[in-house]
Length: 369
Picture 1 (spheres, rainbow, N blue to C red):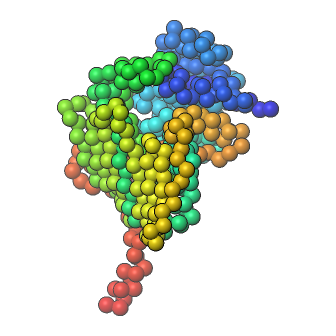
Picture 2: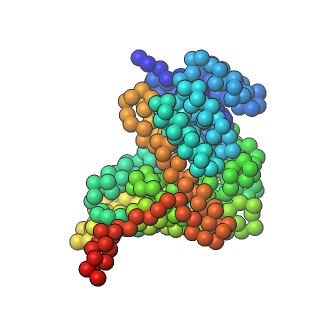
Picture 3: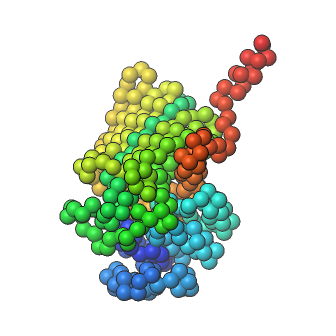
C-alpha cells in the first residue's frame, strides 16, 4: 500500500486545526515533518502530532528525501516562494488561500505544476460540500439554462483580526479548542496578509464562482471601505465574465459574532439556485414555480475543514480527481488583483475581453439593416 509522506510548511493555527488532523486520519498518509521558524514551536508540534522531523526552515524540510508532498499553510506573503520551491523539488502541493499576492505568481505556479505533472490544490473547503458539488453539477448540466447573474453576500465576524485588535481566531471566546493561535500580524499586517477582507475572505468567494461555473473573469469594478483600518473591511465587487455573465460580491468581517451569512443566488434562464452556505441550505426554483429543497447539510458538513487535505492525498494516489485545482486559485487572484486596482483607480479593470452572448444575433441584425 502506497504511503504519501507529507510535510507541513508553516505549522500554526490552521495547520494544526485542519490539515494535520486530516493527514493523521488518512490511512495512506504519514505526517513526515512540520516546519515553523521557531524551534521550540516546531519541536512541540512534531512531538504532539508524532511527526518524524521538526524543521525551522524551508530549505531544511525540502531536503528530506522521503518527502512526497507538502501543505503550505504559512502566511500569504510566502505562499508563492514556498509553493514554487516545493513544485520545483518535484513535490505535490496543497496551498492555503489566497494562493499568491499576484496573478503572475499564481499563473506561474499553475504552469509549473502542469509542466511537472504534479497536483496543485488550493485549500477551499466549500468546494467539497454535497451542496457545492450538486450545484456545480446542475449548472454544468444546463438545468438552470444560461447563467445570467450570480449574487453573493459573504460575512464572517473577523474584523478584529483584520484590524489587529485581537489575534484569536475564536475572537477571545471560549467556544473552540485552539491548539495554537496565529502570530500577531498574520491577518492585520498588509505586508504579511496582502490586505484585509479582499484577500482573507473574498478569496473564498472568488474561487467559489470559478468552482461553480467554470467561467473566467473578464473585468471587475470594485469599491472598498477601510472604516479607519489599514485593511479593507467592506468590499463590493461587480464581476463580468468572459461570456457576459454578471456577478456581484458583497463581503465584510464587521458583523456580530452570532451572525454569519454566505448567500449565493444563481439566476439562470430556466431556473434559480439558492444556497446559504453557513446554514447548509439549498433550493432550486424553476420558472414553472416548482421548488426543490435539498437535504440540509449536517453541522459537520457545512465547512469541511479537513476535506482539502483528504482530497489532496487521494488525488496524489489517483483515487479521485483534484477537487480544488490551482486554476481556481488563479481565477480568484484575477478577481482580487483587478478589484484592488479598480478600488484605487475608480475604473473598471479589464482582465480579458467580454464575449457578447448575442454576437451572432447582432451580426445578423446588422446584415438586415
